[in-house]
Length: 138
Picture 1 (cartoon, rainbow, N blue to C red):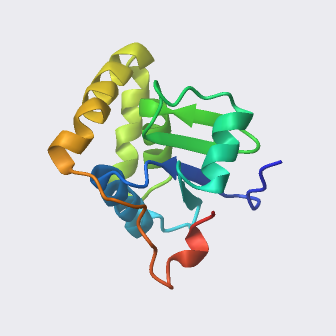
Picture 2 (cartoon, one colour; picture 1 turned 135 degrees about the horizontal axis):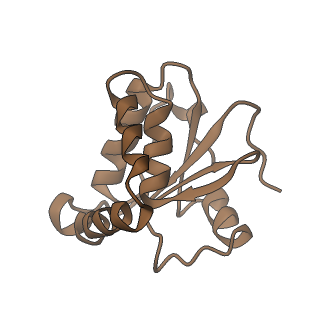
Picture 3 (cartoon, helix red, strand yellow; picture 1 turned 120 degrees about the vertical axis):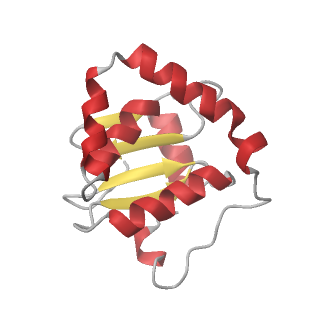
């Protein structure tokens, strides 16, 4: 069982990806209603979610959005659902949900496939500051 506090969603991200880490920082700054918690894919909870939902990490390896009530989202749908909970103007990106997922995911996959080449990669997952530690699950 994966426990997420009521009213929260968990963003599971590639903890060694510089783009993913920058995206997490972006979300943290704009999460005015404190809706999100975070965990690297490489963490224990990340591994539990991957196993529980039988996620093929060869196909989905950069972002997941998990909520016990609504289930799990991946790729562009996860990114846009996250954007919908952030402050203006980021939340208007939700309009792209009208674009069919196969088109959105083609763009998403292209960026995800090249993210290490374009943005680099860390040797280990980022370590949150003491202030942010309460937002991260392991």
